[in-house]
Length: 84
Image (cartoon, rainbow, N blue to C red):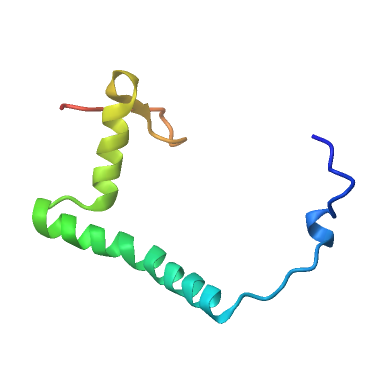
């Protein structure tokens, strides 16, 4: 798509620094992004004895066609099978 001649290219624009409030939001969001998966994992392990990564693998497997997925690129090319 052609770039609009009236607008400067993003690399050429001058950016203003974040305000103190914007900076606080970015820092808080960063903490949440890092803490949330650990908190969910700990809760799932405690309540269901299933880690978040195990749950995500089973979720993706249950949604796959035929409930089968290739296991990455590890030889030999195996398939996961859901017993659910």
